[in-house]
Length: 242
Image (cartoon, rainbow, N blue to C red):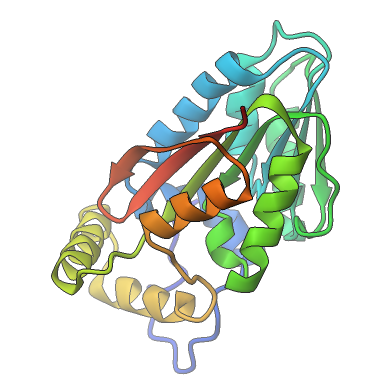
């Protein structure tokens, strides 16, 4: 279904939420809004084929409608004893993720749970995915979550962290924001839609720069941290536990 949520003028724009309306159009919304999204989803599956080990868990934190979960599952079919847990605090997203994943047969165990990712236990993990999720948590909660992820990962386990970035140099930051908006307009969004969605996201999505992400990951214990993908002000980092 096509995303038309912000196509008409909204008198009082509230904070962006992952409600029923957003869940319904989410695949169209994210593919038209996040440059490189499909590449990241594909690469998450490729990373799963390298890092997921037998009899371990994979966590997709903030799984939305299950795109990353499905990509992992397709690439670990031959790995014995794997369990994938998709976690999201949006009931409409969880419902659609279950429907989406159930539409494809697999012997890999997948459980989709409605929960706060800050409150779940992470254990025996060979892979954790945070795909455009951390940016929606309060900044003061980010280190605590990343520490829990690090502690729950097995040696050699991997974290994939995809985020929207900000840049400290104002001219470059504005350039990349403008290019992102141009990308959205090229995908059919109007100036009104771009403007209204940006307003809705202002108070709920607080972005960090790449250096902060890398520093934070190393401080919680990850020895190998690198940006592996970037398009404009969006990208993805891989962090490996030695």
